[in-house]
Length: 216
Ligand code: AP5
Ligand code: MG
Ligand code: ZN
Image (tube, rainbow, N blue to C red; front, side, top):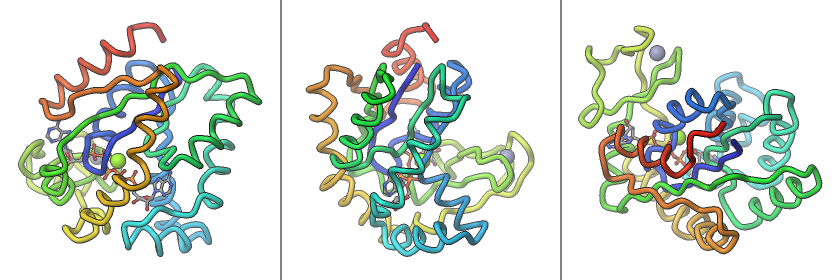
């Protein structure tokens, strides 16, 4: 199964990704996670990416597209993969399409998680993530059993640097200007599945599985 997860900041891409990669046994490729790992490790890429991420802007394409196509070329992606947060503008989508054509890979579906702009800020600002395993919680909508502690591995929960109200608002604007046009782009390719992201986490997952089918 070769999938793209599309949706605004806070739509639930990362949350749903956890269930999807487990069900379909495919690697989860999140450009945001790759950048955050590089920032944590203090790499050159991390230093450059941080400048843009802290402002809620897209990291330039030349730092982004190659790392995704390199990752897709690895052996564990032969039977499928899930891209989360890539592509993020039409030029990234065109770059990906030409890479996929050259390598004879066809995308199965683009899962587009739709959530109204009015609740996205609340979702992102209340998000907490586990430092050890990356599990995602929300202080109100999906709270951990114990405050500040991961249910899965007892790791410490933290808040992302770009999850302030101001930066989230900027990220939403960038989404509307640069990423949302991809909904039409993939609709015209006939591979989009629009999913109502304003339901319980479990119901959103059910709808995604219905759209993807049970085939691996
Ligand atoms: P990235 O890490 O991709 O962030 P994003 O797209 O802004 O999306 P988020 O991770 O914020 O949201 P999500 O949809 O994963 O939501 P989640 O499941 O966590 O990118 C960060 C930055 O990196 C970008 O701004 C950019 O600078 C850079 N970048 C990344 N990719 C790039 C690219 N391709 N090109 C250029 N730059 C790039 O859920 C959010 C919260 O809501 C959680 O607390 C969760 O518990 C809760 N929640 C989830 N589902 C539900 C539900 N159904 N009901 C109630 N609450 C819910
Ligand atoms: Mg995410
Ligand atoms: Zn954890």
